[in-house]
Each structure stands twice: as C-alpha cells, then as structure tokens.
Image 1: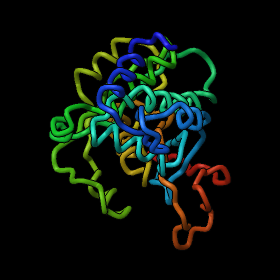
Image 2 (image 1 turned 180 degrees about the vertical axis):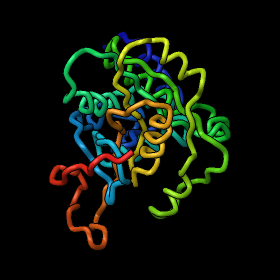
Image 3 (image 1 turned 90 degrees about the horizontal axis):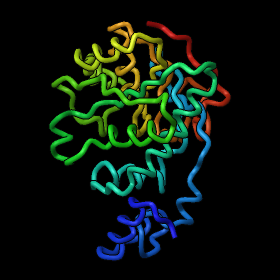
Length: 257
C-alpha cells in the first residue's frame, strides 16, 4: 500500500465522501487505477486548424475528449483538487516533449496562462497555476514556475466564440507583471520559456501569451498543454488537417513577430 501522504489523504476522502471514477464510473476514487494507467504518457506537436500566424510549436499529451475532458472540467470548474497531481503529470509529459529538441542544461521557466482575477475568486483556486507547479516539481530542479502574465480587463468568456471572435477577444488581453519580470531578469542567465495551459483550442490564447512575452523581449520556446481539441473535419479550403489534428503530417507555420 502506498505511504504517500497525498494519496492517503485522497483515499481517506474517497472513503468518507464516496464517489465514482470520472473515466469508468466505478464506485470509489475519482480516478480508478485502471483508468489512470490508461492515460497517455507520450506527447507531441498538436497544431490547431488554422494555426494563428507566428504561433510557436504547441505540444499536447491527449485529445480534449472523453475522460481527459472530464478531468480538466472537474478540476477547473468543480474544484476537484485531488486531480491536480494527475493533470500536472500529464502537463509534465507535454513540457518534456517540448524540451526534447533542446540541447544543454539551461534553466526552464514555465509560464502559466493567467485566469481573470474574478474567475479565480469564483472558483476558489487557480487551476492552471497549481497544475503548472506540479509539472515543474516533476521535471526537476532546473524547471521553475514564474507567473509572468496577468489578464487585462475586458476579456469575455470564450465559450461559443468562433475563431475570429476568439482572436479579437484576446487581442491585447495579457500583459507581463513588472515585478515578476524583474525577478526573472535578476537570474542573469539564458532560460527556455514554455507557456503552459490546460487546453489548446484555436491557439488564440497561447498566441496572445506569446505576444505579451515577446513585447518585453522574452522569446517563447514552445507551448505545452494537457490536451488539444479534436477537429473532426478540415477547415474549408484547407485539406492539410485530418482526423485527430495531431499535426504530425503538417509542417509548422513560419514564425512571424
């Protein structure tokens, strides 16, 4: 039996409160051992269709569908905090894939996509910040989390917006926190910066985070997410994307700044 304190607390909560697995509905824990073991462990490039111009390579470990979708929504919207370690593990897989092409041992800074302050207050937690911290801890001592970005007022809920409206909604919606930027500058060394989010849909959020960082001279190496949405049909006039939108057959768009 595992003696890990966090796992023991989760098990005790399951016994007291009851529940069922989000994957198979088996009574007991939020995630049963079988469903946990069935989760993917290998990440790769996952381009949205069409990709925003200039977006760096995004990496995801899973499709935003089924069980993984239930994990993300349960953690984010229903405050199922016991899912944080599991989602952090999935995000760590994506970050590791993003760092695989990079040689050397330069420090890595993970920058979580910010939530609106009102949203954090309403939820009672910041799910992306918590998930990114778990991922950093799993990836080793050269990886740290720096919440460089903040959300500016005026952004509306993205649900139901098409690609054009998402991009318009997010344009200029993020800015760098001056104090966090000064802390990063004091490190005095080259670092690899990876933007982290839970889900990649159109790529608009990731591209806005990249724009805000580039505006203060910070180049982003890659984007890492837990899951990417699955596009069932190719966009009109674009037959490059098929099936699971894995991007494996699609070269990345040339960077533009």
